[in-house]
Length: 206
View 1: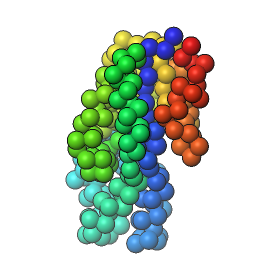
View 2: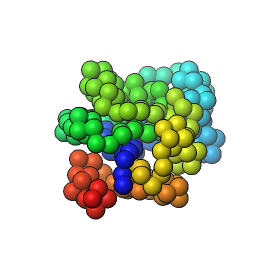
View 3: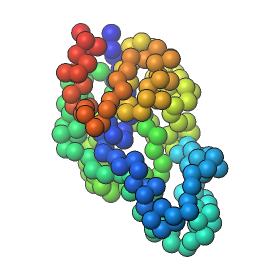
């Protein structure tokens, strides 16, 4: 029986353009290429091991530019809108109080700042209030798809994986959750919407 629903954030609630940052960087820095070093820097920033100042300093040095505004705007270009019907959906779930609701997101400081700006702080605080727990990777020092972030949620909330339903648009994250025994939905944002959860996966909630 499902007792807890755990949601990803990007492309589940808030719309993303996942290629926007790379497009913006390449417009101004056409020689830019993703490397293992850059991946590690991005992951360190996502888990709070690197400060925003250190993150920006790395890129200004790496790209040989002082245009920090362009860098920040490019980094945040991925963040789009938060449709009102999804806010209504999580509000209704919260009011019904049938499930324990948890948000679990790989999110860094600059991105969450942009999310709040796009949503407005009032809507963002309302959104947060509908969850029993609200976990962002840069606050807890853990990130998906590593299994330890899922184990952290289970241990922190005294949950059994078999009673948890996890929703994420990234298959790699879903695979990790499946290996630990979670029930899952690998949502396809191009064709599906989280508000259709009970219709698409009705058998899970019988």
